Image 1 (cartoon, rainbow, N blue to C red):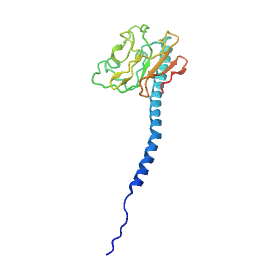
Image 2: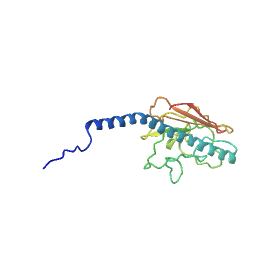
Image 3: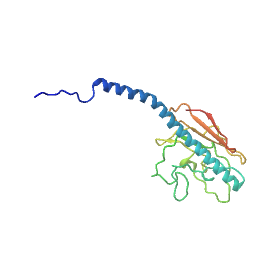
Image 4: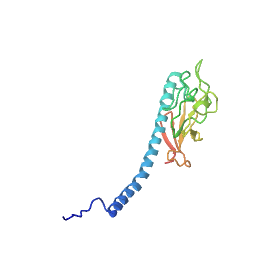
Length: 196
């Protein structure tokens, strides 16, 4: 009986060539993927600035002024947990986990008085920042449960007729060069510092 010795499978050289090709493709695509993920985070910040613009315009149409308390004008970004009773971000929601946010979005400080006879401002310590205890002038970026610690630079607190909302973050993950965006009352979007 004659046994036919037929080779089965791949040789070591063929496997090494395939592995080399896959490595080259990975070296080319991973930096592009990282940059595209950072740009997606950047687009989210831009969408939040447009949301602030829309809410400010709606508020001005009703009260003839802009305001720097983001919850009072009705702006709460997606993923910020709200208290069922007060509708304030973060207050009374100790069990709710905040989603990762990559940008601080809003105004640098809070200084205007609340509009209306009986406003219900939220505590700035609950889920946002600001100089006063009753305004949320910006929503912080939360990464792994910790604030990135950078206030929205180049943002200008509304003075009644103008405003400039800002967003600052580290979408590339380098934590050295912040990426900063602003949008004003004329819907001018500007990238004041490029961090990508």
